[in-house]
Figure 1: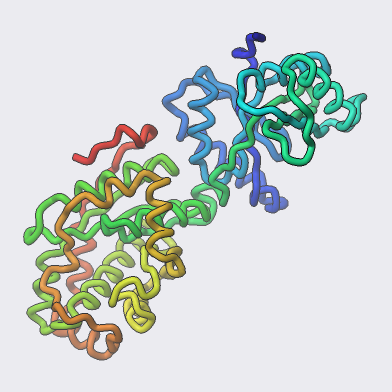
Figure 2: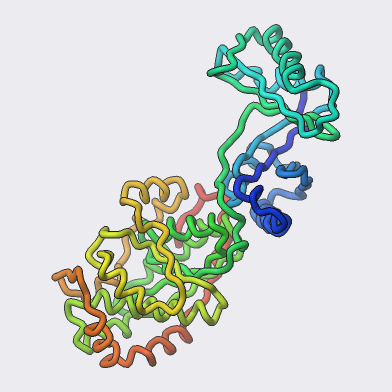
Length: 399
């Protein structure tokens, strides 16, 4: 079998970035910065720009490098490949090596020329390589529905041969759309919402409201672990923890009653707005899903949003729970989110749900509790944590 270890690389292909016109170099530069941060522990990384493609080589294994790149927002296709000379025979050798041992009876060769000066047309190159694969591996050609596909790209200095085209995260590189403050509850929804906003180019900071001293520290541990898991998509994530229990009791004393949950959510949004302004963020993000619980009916979403001083983004507003759970499983946040903790939102709350809170009633409660003073106190007291980059999610265990 041909030894191709020294010629292995990974191709990263753009999706949306290709449409950015004159601004594309800024997006590509952000993508490369994020890539280097994501793979910093893998050793030296060589990144070459080939039009709408990044060619990546590393001393790390090709499989590990490809797996890291699959998590990178802004990449549409991740393609492990083999580099070889611009010789059809060398490409045929590489194709045979790539396909050997793979299950399947039929194959196809898809060739394209980025360098149009190459003497063979794409169809001619594909035919030469296909004949070699057919004879040497005993596979049958099927151009419609092949079991295996070889992709061959003609570059200006070499040929690139690959047997896999893996779907990347897509979207935009983190940091190209601004900053956001995510209200992170510790449940299933908000981590998924944060990830979806990262894919739209937002760099996310996080704020978690703890019911201390009336609840234990478990929710803080979960928030820390969740941010550590999400950090692999952006790096240098920050988590602000606000001790919220005394403020909740103050709202209850002010007569919140059945409006306790909505009053708390409005106060959280006000505090998150103050933190976001201080940290120069441009928006807030929540994991709300329309109609999922009583506080997320359309009237209640509106009355909570009224308290925000920045745009409030709800990327999960149209998603049902099963969709959110599926994404959480793929992200690796599900196992953390379902760990037991004490939900601060249930403190002092009434058993009777309110599905249509009135803004005047909520403003009256906030005046009685002197909520504006509370907002400044809570924002100023927020504790800052920097969960570490979690590049190996399967090894994560919350503290």
